[in-house]
Length: 164
Image 1: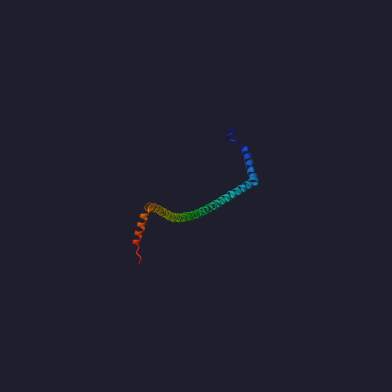
Image 2 (image 1 turned 135 degrees about the vertical axis):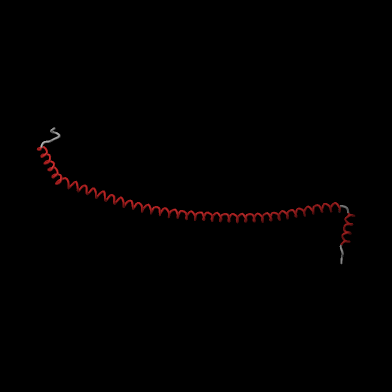
């Protein structure tokens, strides 16, 4: 029962030691503990403020990044549009040049064909004339081989001529 009901002396000494402990703690420990708690509270508060500021800065940076991305996309679209326009223009110019060159080649071929045709016709006429002369010569030689026929032919030609 002594444990449940302590004696007066034990309670007195326990109270005295406890009070002494509280005085010592108040004098030496409470102030440094409270100072460290206040310091920790200030650190936490400043860290929270810094985190909030950093969060705001991150939002601002993100907004700036979005703005820059939007501008970059717009510039990309403009550049792509200009490139497409330039490509179409180059293709059209190349088509025009190719068509002009093809027309020039066709016209040169047409002129060349016409010249070759004239040359061939001229050669054919020359050959026909030569053949006609050769044939006429052979015919005349055959017809005029005898003297009597030659005389008749000359008289006939003289009759056809009118001397005015």
